[in-house]
Image 1: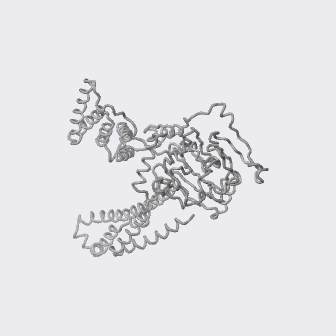
Image 2 (image 1 turned 60 degrees about the vertical axis):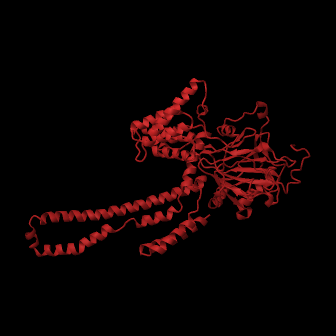
Image 3 (image 1 turned 30 degrees about the vertical axis):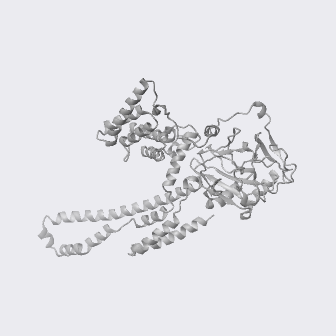
Length: 561
C-alpha cells in the first residue's frame, strides 16, 4: 500500500538535495541530474483512466495551495516591513529637507544619516532582493513530476464528448455541471467557462472531429454572448473555428454566416476574407448545380458524428441509457430470486446466498451481499498502489496493449497476497462449483473519467488460437464480476447481442458462462462496460478457465447445448 509513498519521499530527498546544489552555485551538474531524475520519474501515469488515482491529485493540489498561501504570507510580511521603513523615512526626509542645515546641525541626525546610507539601505536592499518563493518553487518542482500531462487533458476532454454522445446530453448540461444523477450541492458543482468550452472544441478540432468542434465552439460563443468574460478567448477566435468546422460538415450557408459575423468584428482578418470569397464562390456554384437538378458531392454531406469503427455503437449506447430490449412478460415471468446453496454445499445449507436471475439466454445471475464492505475496502487498498492502465489482447500481435476503447486501470491480486483475496477466491469456487486453482488472479479495475470498456468477448475466439496459450489452462469458461462500489449514473454492464443491461450495485456479483458445455464460445455473451457518467466505479473480475472443470461441468456432444 505504501510503496508509492516510499518512492515519493525518496524522490523528495534527492530533489531537495539537488535544488540546494543549484542554490549554492553548482548549476551545470545539478541541472543535468534534475533533468535525468525527472525523465526517469515522470513516466506517463494515464491519470484520467482511474478516478481512484485522480483522488491523489486533489490532495497534491491541496498541498500546493497551502504552500502557495505560505509564500503569499511571507511576501506580505516582507512588503509590510518595507512599507514601515518607507513610511518612517518619508516622514523623516520630509521634515529634514525643509531645513537641511539645521537638521544636520544636530550631531545625532548627522550620525544617523551616515548610518542609514552606509548600512541600513544595504540591509533594505538585501530584504527587497530576498526571494521568498524558494520553498514554494521547490515544492512545485517536486510535485510537478506527478502532474497529468497533455495526454491526460486530451483523454479527459474526449471522455466528456463520449458522455455527451452516449447519454444524449447537450453541451449546456455538461457546461453547467447539472448531470443526471449528480448529488453535488450547487456550491460544489463545477461549471465550464468560455475558455474550457473553447479548449474542448480545440481538442476535437485537432482530431478532425468537426462535429464536436462545432458543438463546443457554439457553447463557448453562447456563453460569451450571455456576458461571460474571458481573458484569453474572444468571439473572433471562436468564429474562426466555427466557420471551418461547419464548412467541413457541408453547411456552406452557415459557414458563410459565421465568416461574415467574424469580419464584422475584425474586418482585417486575412483568413476570414479569403474564406468569404471561397464560400461565396462555392455557394453560388452549388446553387447553379441545384437549378440544373444536379447535386454536388458537398450537398450530399450530412451533418453527423465522425465515422465509427464499432458497428453496434447505436445499440450499445441505447442499452447504456436504459433503452434496451424489453423481455416479453412470458420470459420475464421465468426469472426468479431464490436462496441458493449450490446443491446443499456445507457452507451454504444453513446460510444460503441470495441469487437473482438477471437474464435467461444466456443465463446471467446476480448474487447479493456476497462480499462485505470491509473485504471490498481491503481489496481496493491492496490494488490501488498497483493500478496500471488496463490492456487488451491484440489478435494481430498476440500481445497486450492499451486501447482507447478501454478507459480504466487494473491490478492483479494473487490468493497468497492477503487472506481476504484467498477467502474471496474460495467463496467463488463454493458458489459456482468451479475449480478456481486454474483461474486467473483476481483483477481489480477502477474506471476513469467517462470510464468504459466497449463491446468485447471474455473468451478467446477461433481467430485467436493463442489467446491464453501461455497460461496452459484452456479458454475462459466463465466470468465472475464483483461490483465494489455504487455508481450514481451510468456504468452499466450491457450485453449487446441480447439486449441485457446489468446495473452496478455494491457488494453484488454477476456470473455467466462464456462457453457452451461443448467448449464452443457463446457469442451472446459479448458485453461492454458503459461509460461512468457520475461516480467512481470499482469492480473485480475472476476469469475461470476450462482446466479443472472436466468433472464439474461435463462436456456436451451438441455444439450449443
